[in-house]
Length: 425
Image (cartoon, rainbow, N blue to C red; front, side, top):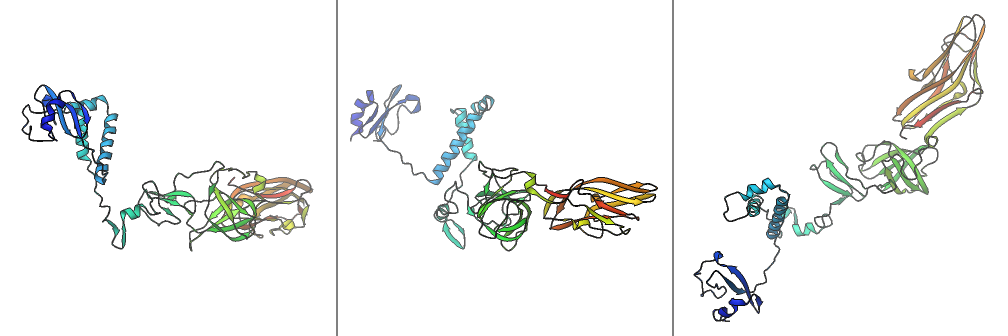
């Protein structure tokens, strides 16, 4: 088509797309009056005058979306956002710059921003991750370990060390973990269900020493679980426990010691649907102290007639077996003595030995003085918090350093008891 011949007619009034032509208005000051390529350039014509119209071929611009192109677009978008957040004084600064000439402040800023933030070029089809791994980046991006920019790697274990800020998804625990600067790997933004329970990895029964039980998880749980946390699992029926010890990660597993209170046990069968909670009372978990107490009571009168001074007795063979954990101990007894003479004294206490007092804080005494036969009694109430790293037995023991007729545990007046209430409630 001879554009030079049709231009005088179309260029006067026509505007827009006509066939394969695009006609648009252009002002004089943007071009020379005598364009050197007029009319030799068949793709561009300019009317002489204060303003005119330009006729060009109609083009459909290509959009290959190359990595560099997309990077520049992203940088440009960031620059525009920055500009939108500037205050008036900052924008005025760029408006008053002298270079480049004939540009608004936003244009100057975007130009400088683009120059200051060049894009890193990635050779998608040639760059390998390592000399021994021929997978290209596109292969890696589409693999199950990445799957696109919004997916975090899914693992069941993780390295002992890692760059700070590394993030992993533990598929066996159904949680995200991250490598923290001060504490290593740990739970990140744990998603807690509405009932307060978090899914736990596969659990395997290890052993029982009722009311304490052990099971293992084939993962390092030392930075995730700790004493006092709650456990919910199914062993024929739903059972609840309190963690009392978390063993070291060894042999590919972490062994947990849990306390089942008065109601919950492990039979040694398959453990299914395991959960843990950091909450005090997640749904279904009772915090009734009676349910989480080891107790021994005695209602029989116990006595020792003509006790030998300095000899320690264990009246009624009263003792209590206390599991691993932290416990609020309480001892109550009505202790009575009968003596003849000027004075009498007798002692009672809780001890891990039957022939000595092993804890002075769990020892009490009664004293009396009279010149004839005397009966002296008192209520004994002792309390202490004890932490046990292994199961132990405590005995209720008594003795006197002087000669006397007898001493008694008057359980007929007030029941003798020893209680260890779990301190993690």
